[in-house]
Amino acid sequence: MKVAIYSGNIPSTTFIENLIRNLSNSGFRILLFGKKIRDVKYNENVEVHNTPNNSIIILFFILKESLKLFFKSPNKFSKLLKYISSSDTGLKSKLKELGMMLPIINNEPDIFHIQWAKTVQKNSYLFNLMKCRFALSLRGAHINYSPLNDESLAESYRKYFPKLDGFHAVSKAISIEAQKYGAAPEKIKVIYSSVQDELLQIKTESKINRSEVTNIISIGRYHWKKGYHYAFDAMKILIGKGFNFQYTIVAQGDVPEEILYILSDKELKSRVVLKNGMAHDELMNELKKSDMLLLPSVEEGIANVVLESMAIGVPVISTDCGGMNEAVSDFENGMMAKVRDPNMLAQKIIEYSELSENKKEQMKLIAKNTISEKFTDKKQIDGFVNFYNSLLYS
Image 1 (cartoon, one colour):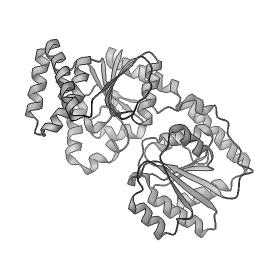
Image 2 (cartoon, rainbow, N blue to C red; image 1 turned 120 degrees about the vertical axis):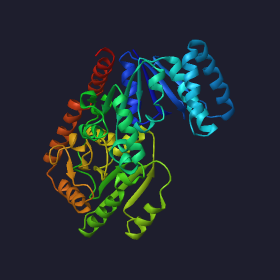
Image 3 (tube, rainbow, N blue to C red; image 1 turned 90 degrees about the horizontal axis):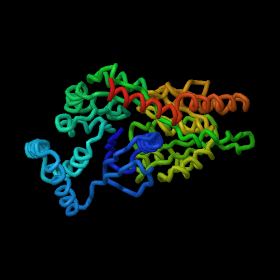
Image 4 (tube, rainbow, N blue to C red; image 1 turned 60 degrees about the vertical axis):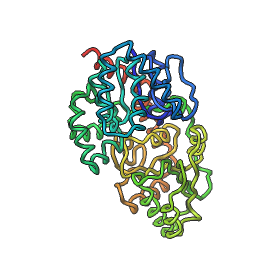
C-alpha cells in the first residue's frame, strides 16, 4: 500500500514524524512530500520527494515533473494546467503549487493523507486528477478555532469535507468539532497519538530528597492558545501564598515582547526561566529534571508533551481543554484545572505538592499505565492499518 503524506515541511511535527516511523516499520510504502528543512534518516521504504526552495532550481524541477505527467497522462496534464491558469494567485504561488502537487500526481499513491485541514481547499482539484482515496487528519487549531475566525475557511470545510473518504481524529473532542463542518461521523476514526516505547522504560524517579524549590515546566511554542498569560497569573498567586518554585518555559523562536513585558510587570523575572527549543533527547532530559509539567492551554487536541511526561513519570497539571480529559483524570493520573482559571491552576499545583509520596507514586504509576494502554506505537499502528484498509476495501 502506497501512502502519500503531505505535511509541508520535512521533518514536521512530533505526531507526523511518529506516524511516518510507525507506518514504515509496519511495511507501508510512504511517499513523503514537502520542503526539506534539514536531513532526516528514515527507513528505506520512506521515499522523500523534496520540492526545491531555490527559485531557479524549482523551474527545472517543475519542467521535469511536467514532462513526466504529460507523457504518462496528457489528459491529467491538460486539466492541471487549466486549473492553475484559472487560479487568481500570482506566478510565484502558481509555481509553488505546481512544485508541490506534480510529484504527488506522478507517483499515484493509493491513499493521499492530508495532514492540515486548511490545505484541503488549496488542493481540491486533486479530487478530479487522482483516483486514490483521500484522508484528512483533524487536529488542533485548524478545527477548534481557525474556522470560527474565518468564515471563508469554514465554508470551504463545509464544501470539501463531504468529498473526503475518511478522517483521522486525534481525540473524540475534535471529532465532534469536525462534524459541525460536514465530516460524516461514520467516516471518522479516532486514533490517539503514540509515545515511543523507550520512554515507558524510563523508571519513575522519587523526588523525596529533592530541594524545597518545586521545579515546574511548560513546553510549547509562544502562542495565545498555550495559555502562558494564565500560567503567569498562577505563578503570581503562588508567590502570594509563599510557595517556593521555579517555572521554566521551553519554546522555539524568539521570546515575544509581550511575554517579556508581563514577566517584568508581574515581577516574575527571578522565578521564570525561558529556554529556547531543543532536540527531543535534550527536551526529555529537561522534563525529567522537573517536579511537574504544567499545561495551561486554552486549546489542544491531546498534547504530545503531556503523554510523554506521563510516560516518563513526571506529574501533569493540565487544563481541561480539547481532548485532554481523554488522557488526564483529576487526582487519578494527574491534576486537571478549568481553562482560563489561574486560581485553580495554582490550587492544583499546591494540592499535588502536598500529597503524600505514596499517593504521588501511585498517580505516576497510573499515568504510565494510561500510556501503555491507550497511547503506544502498536495502538497507533493498528489504528491506521484498520483506517487505511477501511478506505481501500470498504
